[in-house]
Image 1: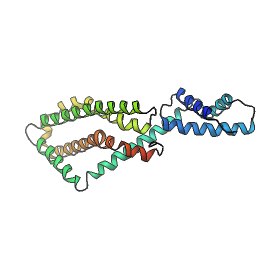
Image 2: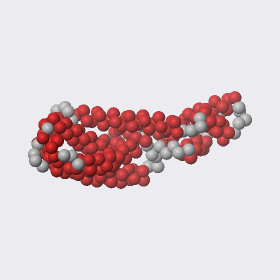
Image 3: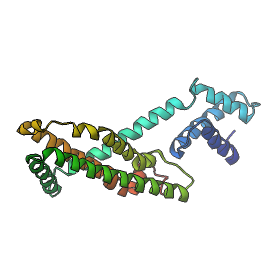
Image 4: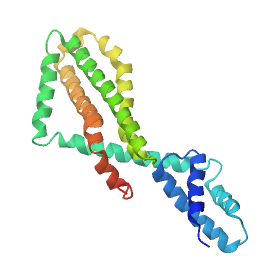
Length: 229
């Protein structure tokens, strides 16, 4: 016995009722439940759809779909950071390497002056303003995308909302930069290390807020073949 389209839709609603919001994970779970229900019906032909569904659901254990959801989130986060790492490596090859070196030497020279601490604070204030502004823009874009489609994709949400967490992390650390002693900038090794960190951080923020979101359609089509439909 095969499931009917209304029964398939019932399974989608069932996954939503159990806190699975993303369509890609819903589809995976619906397919799994459907196969289990059809297997149950092979041995218990008189069992109702609801009873067969509940019996299939019990196989997920006490926590239901939560374990599957956690595994999918880890997998999608891993995929997202792989995209970030791939984009970051490109800034260390020509011609983008020229921009990276220019950014590094600009920061290094700024930290080599008597106004090093204020230069560093100013740099991170600029980054904060940029990240907060882009976070608001990406949040607005995400809402617009949701308004156009009733489906919610996990990777899409990560792309448009993950970077905002970096902005909050940066804001929480900003007072630490202010408390730096001016004497530490007399050490060229510290200046060099801080310059490297600042350069990488600037690139990471730019990729997170600008590059990856602009490639969202391409990345989503690669991840979800059904996304373009």
